[in-house]
Each structure stands twice: as structure tokens, then as C-alpha cells.
Amino acid sequence: MRILFIGAVKFSEMMLEELIKNHSNVIGVCTLATAPFNADHIDLTKMASIAGIDVCYSPDINSTESIAWIRERQPELIFCFGWSRLIKPTLLELAPLGVIGYHPAALPANRGRHPLIWALALGLEETASTFFFMDSGADSGDILSQRPVIIKKTDNAGSLYERVTEVAKDQLCELLPLLENGQYSRKSQGQTQTNYWRKRSRLDGQIDWRMAASSIHNLVRALSGPYPGAHFLHNGQEFKVWRTEVIPEERSNLEPGKVLAVVNNCATVKAGSDAVRLLAIDPELNLREGEYI
Image (tube, rainbow, N blue to C red; front, side, top):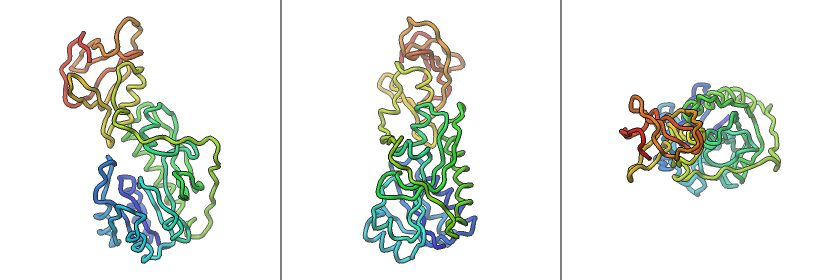
């Protein structure tokens, strides 16, 4: 089975590595040299070149040049993992088996942008690992394989990213022979119970101390590495927050943003409800009890 691979993030690299380990017939890779809007961007050129796979830089995957390069390789199947641009009909119809995409959410719910970030920021307890046949919509094609993924209270973006990737690797290994032999099945998503998560803005990552402590804590979890970090402003300077914990606080007559205690240079700050202990921030900030941030 002749496979064309499209991708440009860390997840893409891990999936391509799995295909190479399985001795899959990957006949071409389309990737990006840079992707300023993807914190986990990876140029797949090095891995592909070591494996002897042709590479094409495709800033516009739907361009005449990209389509011609892909068509020349006569793929039977296209994998598109970690690509933020929509695929147009010409490419969707190019390979006989179609284009298979991936979304770390329980489709048809939670289509759209930044699924791991939103899942953590919203405090969800479960997501999913979903392979689907791409169509002209966003994450709306028939489901090929879906597995639930539990979100632990101790998870941050890095640990959840890693676990979702491990689940996806297992799914991919199971899917390859089914696709090769035509024994796979596809399930329509339908149009009920769907929602689309929007693109995250920079302001979505800014801590407002009037938020509940649990919401601040979830935001910090959601934006930890490989993502850019939650942040707050103090005296005109930006501080990144990488790790926090929620501290119960029953007093209702304390204003949000007030520093309640400082222990080992870790400040506990009053939130809209309860308080947040700042365990890791960058740059370091020396605060005193009674100050406001």
C-alpha cells in the first residue's frame, strides 16, 4: 500500500516513526520548514531523509505544485496528521483510499482547534483518540477508529499529549493491515451532539485572579509545555506560570490577586474562590505577603 504522509508537528513525527518501524511503504512526505503558530512544530525532513523517503515542503498543500508532486507518487492512501490547514477536494479525491486524519477528541463532539488545550482548560475528565476519513469540513468525516482517553487530575498538556500519542500508535498499528486488506469499517458522525472549539487567542492564556482557583489551575495545566504557558501581568511585566496547586480558602472578604502567604518563594494568591499556590513561574518574582498582583 503506497502511503503519502502529511504533517508538521511532534505528533506527526511520532506517527511517521511508527510507520517506518512497521516497514510501511511511505512514498512521500509533505511538511513545513517553519510553522510559527504551532508550538510543537517539527520539520519531518530529517526523519524522512534518513529513511530514504522523498520530501516536499508544502506551505500550501492545496497548491498546483503540491498536488502535482503528490500525484506523481501515485499514493493509494494519504495520512494527514498535525496539519492546521483544510484539505480541498482535489487532494481529498486523489488517493483511492482517501485521506485519513486524526483528532484527539471524542468526535463528533469537540471538533475544531486546540483540542487538548481546551479539554484541560475546561476541566474535562475524558477525551478520545480518533482517526477519521477527511472530507471538506473540519473534523467531520466518517470515523475509522476511536478510543477513549482518561484525563487524570495530575495531567498537564505534556503528559496528556504523550498518552494520547501512545494510544494513537496502537490504533495505527491495528489499522494498517485492515486498510491494506480492505477490512476496515467507517461510521458516520452525523450532525447531532457536535460543537466546534475555536482558535485560542493570546488573551485566553492570561490569568485573571477573579477566576476560580480551579479554573486558573486548569488553564496552567492546559498551556504547559509543549505549549506557550499561561501568564499574568505584574507592574507591566509578563510572567509565565508553569505549575500551580489549588489551596482551599474559606475567607470571603479577601480580594482576588492578594498574596496570602509566601513559603520557599512560592506565593499563594487569592482567586475568585479559594487560592492558587504558584509553584513554578518564569521569570522568578519575589513577592511579599499582603502584596497584590
